[in-house]
Image (tube, rainbow, N blue to C red; front, top):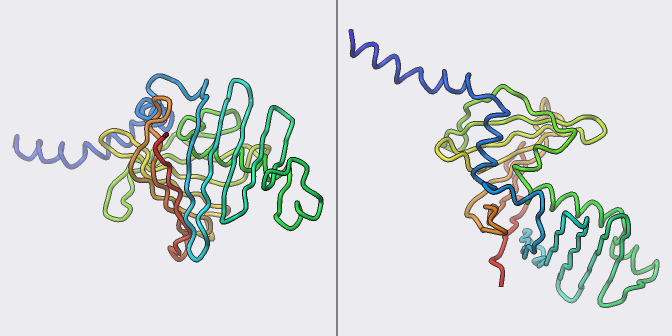
Length: 236
């Protein structure tokens, strides 16, 4: 009888725990793993990122983020082209190959714009600020935590959506069951269509005492097409 009770306990404990663990609790544990000292709120640092895209030249970027001063800059090199965006609060500057006043023709030819500068700022501060960014206003954390298996590994999965004024995509974040490290996430524009992408995370870089994923490999949800990889380099 004791053996039967023990077997039942072993079989059902994971299920019971997943039901008891709320989305808010899971997020708190994940943030404790990645940013135990709460440094993201006052982040002032640099990221060196190489973007590898199939059949295209690499993009090497130096990114500076200063959240307290609302400053962001990105200087990217692709072949012989060097593009730099500098944002200071509401002010945006564009520099192309050293020219701080590029002509309208150059801007259009290279698809440079203030709106793209703001897009890049939101992109990099969101991705490299995860999972801490999930505490931002307008984020809706779904309290039901699921246990899912992806590529042979089992994860705790947190679902997040956003208020209309913030965004329309739905995100799923996959966390290691032992230490709550974020190891994958995926987003959908429309879950019923299985569109969007999933991103596999591997390795870590310690930046301002924050554990950030070193490698992000991007794939399409629908057919698993490989899209590219972002590599966070060690600071030099």
